[in-house]
Image (tube, rainbow over all chains, first blue to last red):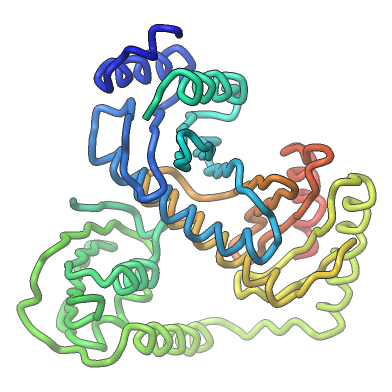
Length: 129
Length: 236
């Protein structure tokens, strides 16, 4: 992990690809609050762009719910479909910017909390955006 | 980018709403039971539609009754004609009215009495109360209709029911749309975790939604929500 500091974005994409494969995720995406996909493990850029745009919309919609329910800072959003497939969006702040890690996890039996923490730590502590 | 999907995941009304709200110029081609229809959008307005021997508003009202089939979206497609002047929300309202009328014509009327509704609501309240009392971090547990109407609720804190109902409907519809757009299956559950509170939304049936708000002193487990959902379902 310590090598991440010196990696360019192409290698970070490799890291995302390996991370996705190792943990059995369908895809992993790093996006900003405007819906711009920064790094993604998907081979299809359209998929990454669509997901990033949806994440941005979800954040906009949730910010209204957040105010109404006095939820303060938003940390994590999970959506589950009929087949047990999960979309997990985790917000974090790095270099004063709010970013979102997005995981698409194919079924409910695959744990993600620990691995998500690990990738967030890697990005926030070792990668200067 | 072309978008494809199933009408089971995204209804014709949803397709119209999304394209109009996003102010799109596009065409949506729909295929259902061997029939084809095309709806044209221009700068967020429905301007033309046709299917079989119908065109304009009448075609839209026909297409709105399709609940099975496929659709594809061609962003940027220009309309060959303008046959519709009515705004999109007016089209959807008129379409819903006509669907209601036709379903009344086709099926015997089944009326639920006030007493029956009250009885169901009391049972739901009891179950929600038991759930909220058993799990200390739960502050709000309620069942709403997809129209945002609160069927029953148990509240440990002050809550504006209108806002709660609105939130559950908005979150449910948004979740449905979001998952459909990223090619996931039917939306059934969402959790939104804030710094101090969490919100859970669960689809109970086609018409009912469970909404739970908790503080973050402990986690509400998925298994607990599923058990609650099973207990509630017979009284919906």
